[in-house]
Image 1 (cartoon, helix red, strand yellow):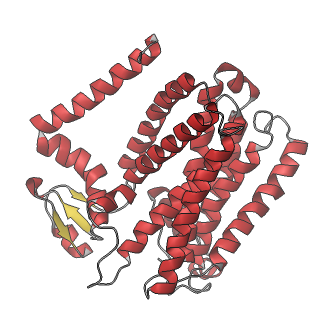
Image 2 (cartoon, rainbow, N blue to C red):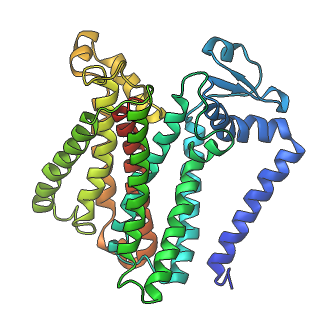
Image 3 (cartoon, helix red, strand yellow):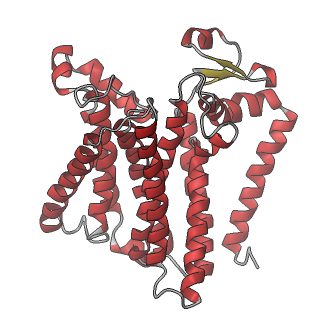
Length: 374
């Protein structure tokens, strides 16, 4: 029975302590623990985003939505804005790492996840996560007087960070179904049915967005963004990874093929940002899109403050984010050597899955937001 080992028991105890601490603190000090921390940085942004508001004020436990930035600035007490903050991103990163340990225990029980080949059938689920988030973005684009297909509170399941849990549980369900089918002798491997389920979910999400683009006036179709993003990402990955494998074999020792996939995934994120943020209007959008994450927003702010306006107007200010993504991906790739796989293959594989997902998920969302003009 779970927990079985001392490590599993320690992890379970830590989960219980954290949950009890947050719940207990919220009950004893609702304004301080829940209002000023949990609500302001985690649930409040989701709540404001669900109603497409500029912000939401804690208001002593009776949240108040505001439609303008000036009203948000005048609101008293903890105020939450849609999107991420540095506090929330750190919290999500720690939650991700902690959750990966629990997934290792699950895979250990299922005797899965020791080989890199386990990663590839999960890539469609990462693309599906980005596409599903754009489905919710499309609900925000619904004009006044038109009822969105997905409304509160169900739309919160498609808003960051809850969408990560939604996609996670869908993926786990697909994995368990694939394991069951394989062990019953219905399929020769579990990878093909797993990849098939993820692809079906991805196609369904994309199909719904295409349907909206031809049946509504608030969703459009600009395939040039997808073509250029995927083309650019593949060009970067192939153009860098082939010479790296030849001239710096130590960097590719642990991930000879997967390193190129990691580089491609993060290039998707970088290229999609460059195209949507700097060249959106030139490629057919009414306006350039705005960054959704504090990291790329901060990098762009630095570029705008350093580059002369005459230069920035020609080359843009989002390209430094692409360079940062490429360099970060190469640094991470170099860390995954053969020794890591020998010491703990399952945890190493899960870390690699997370590395790909944090590039491909947001990148797919940015790419599809531009593709469908949302």
